[in-house]
Amino acid sequence: MKSAKSGRTLVIGVAVASALGGALCVSGPEALGEAYVKALGGTPSESLVSVIAYDETTYVSAGYTSSAGGDILLTKFDFRGNILWTKQIGGSAKDEPFCLIKTFNGDIVVTGRTKSAGTGNWDVFLARFTPDGSLRWAKTLGANDNDEGFCVIETYDNDLVVVGDTDVPAVGWDVLLAKFDGSNGNRRWVKRAWSVGRSDWGYRVVEMPNQDLLVAGGTATGVGEFENRDILLVRFDSGGGLMWSRRIGELVPHWEWARSLIRTSDNGYALAGWQTHREICPCSSFLIKLDSGLDYEWKRIVPSQDPFNNYARSVIQTSDDDLVLAGGYFSPDSYSLDVWLAKANVNNGVFRWSLNFGEAGAEEAGDVTENGCGCLVAVGYTGSYAPYPPNALLARCTAEGTPCVIDKWDGPPSQAWDPPVRPALLEESTLDWEPRDWEPHVWNIDLPITTVCEKCPGDIDCDGHTGHSDLGILLSAWCSHEGDANWNACADLDGDGHVGHSDLGELLADWGCVVDP
Image 1 (cartoon, rainbow, N blue to C red):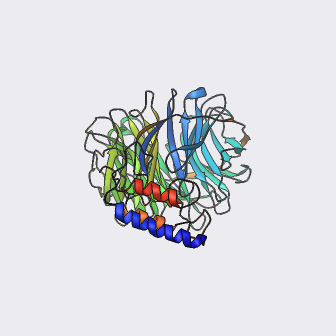
Image 2: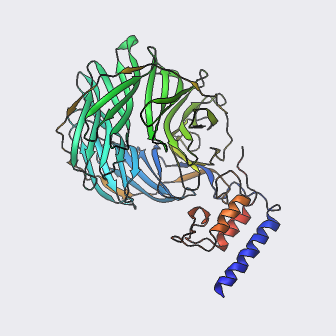
Image 3: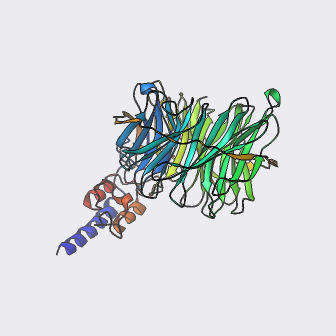
């Protein structure tokens, strides 16, 4: 009887949706929604630099707060941007994160740099947390000068690899690559990739199918007006042995930097960053696609329109296999820095769309991710949507990048780019550094949130409006509970672990809602 009653209710719900769908009005912007922009933080300045989709409907970010002298922020959000928990992590001096990941068993790992512990000025830190943000262990790694960790990955054997840089006095910066035991943070090996008369930096690392490690970063030669900076691409074997290195870029006065590297679904690779004219505006973003053999499929650049420049800090591959860039854009409308998002065809690099949003203050996206519902989530900082000083920015957009604030720009089309490729002539050496135990203070904090705008809470498929496709998704998961075969977390609009009448009520109340184009 219970099953039959549920069936009758379901039929009634469908009939109600069909009958009332055209008459329901658009929900107000104050409603919790699929598309939103939020500013996070109080009197101290905050920013978010990295974000991951933890599961279908929650995500975790790493960022920085200037309170207590400068500490790490680790925050978990639900799909509506509500904070589930926030941890402030740090010691007696500055601590800054650059990257976080979710491990195979659900833990959270963060890397960056610290002055609170270690042996030198800045040291690499690596910290592992439980899913609820409790610290499992933390390590520092470094020598007497500056050492930084920009990216961490989990390898096939559940160990952790960090890439960054190390400052060698009177010589310059070198690429730092280290592997740690994933269970306790003990060192497996530490490598330095260096060159004569050049500085080299490692920003991102990925593991290849044969367990080799591919690093992307930057390299600089010359000084003063003769200085030139290029993209650096380095391949190491699984033990950290140097295999080969390449320089990609144009000659003085153009400088290129690679800031993001990912493996794509076809076992190829995507590389993103920007080109500048000797570290001044304008900036032009680039996007490079490599095949599985590391040969070039295509290379694209997004020309700047001086002074309206753009730069990419992050690239991801979305569920439809295309590539999304996130970064900053100097807006011709407000003459200020805006969040910039763009989507490119994975087959040729041609843009499908490009947009920015922001007001008179400075905004920037440091990273972007896609969750299980198909929504894009960008993090960064904002100087427009919160009181000075700048606060952290959290923006959830539709699958096509549209936030709930008005877009300002369609962006120039990307163009073919063919910079020269040259050998980088790196050498490799082993470092005997041992990780040092670190016990940073970890405490819960309440992070204030300023809601700028929120729209369309019933937009399950994140296409920018609430309608029949969302109803279909909800009905396909009707009466399911978390863990059931037909369970769909995206359809659980009220977050109670069950898809039923209250979720249908939310969807019907929001019927016809549209995110402003």
